[in-house]
Amino acid sequence: MKKQKYSCLEKNTVRFENPVEKLARWGRNLRYMYQRVRYGYCDRDIWMMDDWFLSVIPNMLDELNWTRHGFPSALLDEQNMNQDKEANERGDKEWGRILSEMAHCFREANDRTCTRNNPYEEEWAKAFWTLSDSYGTLGEKLRTEEEIKEKKRIAHFPSLLPANRDLWNKYLEETKKIQEYQRACIDQGMELLRKWVWDLWD
Image (cartoon, rainbow, N blue to C red):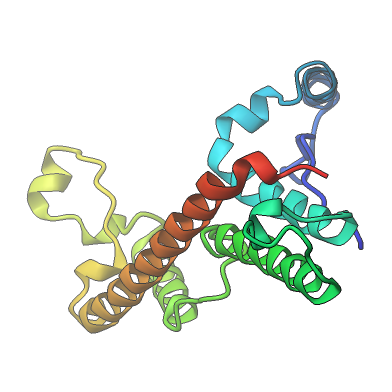
């Protein structure tokens, strides 16, 4: 099984990074690595704890599933002390299913790994670019006379344009459906975690 990466290192996000900024970033990364080794987590993990949990825990569950040597005794029939081979195989298979389901639920709750996509995502992104090209980055050209007079810096979004209203409503409706699905996934994952947390060892 190939391990999935979840680095604590801060990557360069600009095209040209001057030496001072690079040294500062390296210094932060050294601190993050030290914190990971010393405490098991670092500042960057705390800043994105939800992303850390929904990314790292599923990977750990998968690895436990692939490398485990047993399963919880609760999956056996407590009334039958002489479990046969088939009973053990059933218990082992069920434990594998539970671990897989738990990992799946947490991954589906993660925006980056969820398998459900908004079918209007690309079209909505194009609407943003069109707004930027036609009316300025923040839709400055859509400002009212009052806003211009008072020098207000108000962002105008594609949803304000009549031509985009229908697209916005569809995009928003699909987004709500995905969020409801992700909420159901996190609820199911946490319910399984609550039930089996004391058995997550090997």
